[in-house]
Length: 211
Image (cartoon, rainbow, N blue to C red):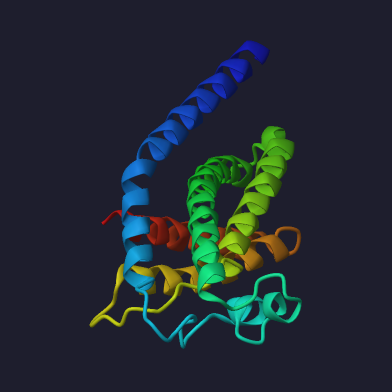
């Protein structure tokens, strides 16, 4: 019996490793799409150093009266904004790498969670550990996106752009991820439903960069 369980765990780990490698192998193509979006949204103008629209975290930290300006850590100058854009690119690149790791963790959680719902509690501790790691990577990636310096200017486009779709989906999977963690010990059915909602919207948010 122990040999069979060891074999199953080895097969599961090998499959997850291969899946992660496939996800990471597509990173280079996805990065091209991400940087193309950055170029589109970061067109330089002679007068505007900040975009008119920023999310609240960017405005609080990087806005004209934001924390970084008031403390003089990052004065609002052309030279400093150029440095901020480099920081932005690095943060969003890291955000994307963490995104693939988080997606792999979500897939693993889905497999392990299904086994738990089928009354196989032998992997409960493993499920909880992977869940904690996945949550940590998710919220780390979210923080990199929320607190990254803003672009110089937002390019207006007709219709729904990849960037807009990604942001709308981010609102959905962020809410679902919070619900998944809050309901973990209180309501198994809602916990499972929110977990699937988080995975579906998160995976779609990643795909919009590629297609």
